[in-house]
Image 1: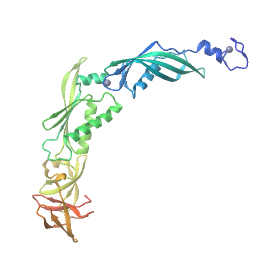
Image 2: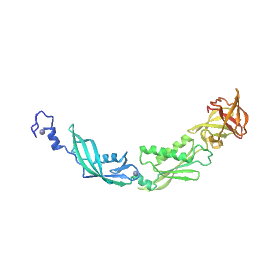
Image 3: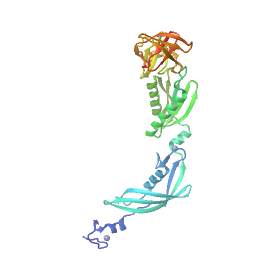
Image 4: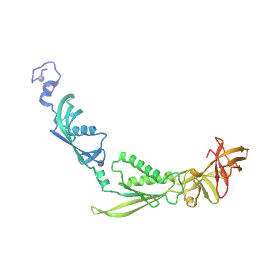
Length: 345
Ligand SMILES: [Zn+2]
Ligand SMILES: [Zn+2]
């Protein structure tokens, strides 16, 4: 067999001609004399067709724009593209582009060049953000809370970090506005789904009260559009706090899914309380206000501590399951009594 173009013999043929003749006649790659790249001025995204996509870096964005712009013969596939960029001015870059393409099972290389023109735009999401667009409000209420463990700033950073995590899976998720209002915080969310999922998470992990409601916002294409409101009311207590309920003092150990796991301080009995009962919980001592007292003596049934308020010894009955790790224990004095807390709680 020989090449019908150049007559070379013993070559691998593509159809009736050798690889070299084929490459000359049929293999080509083209780039337009300029490639436009629109980057969002407010976030790291670029416009691709009618869409905006997140990019890791400008170089990555440029390579992807070049990949979209390169033209190849029918049936050929782009294997690889490498660009060397040289700044002409802050808006224009000269790009020397090495392209590897594959056709008829054979790879070929071509060197091209073009000018990348960078433009500034504003992506759909950033435009909405600028316009304070929102579909739902997440209202977190902390009022009536003596609890110092979790401040409004903590709640805000929790909501923001959960939003960032959701945004990784869907770039249309964002908070367009946060307002400090009487009794708590209002977060304006771009999507109702994100607001709801964060509200539910607060409800579960903090045993908060949860309510949702919707209101008519307007019409779009003849259909009613509603705005959702998710209200989350945080209980005025959390793990580590001592509360009074039913004329007994309890230490809250943990809370989840509507249950409060609490220890009766007099007996040391642990039991779950329904969150519904919690509406009459009265904050007795927040965790941050429970002092430690030095243990002077311990017998089988009693502990003697040095009361830090009076600097006198105080004898207290040990609750069931009492254990301590060091020479100090938590001491709680409420209107109902005084207790030592086990380190195992
Ligand atoms: Zn040939
Ligand atoms: Zn943007």
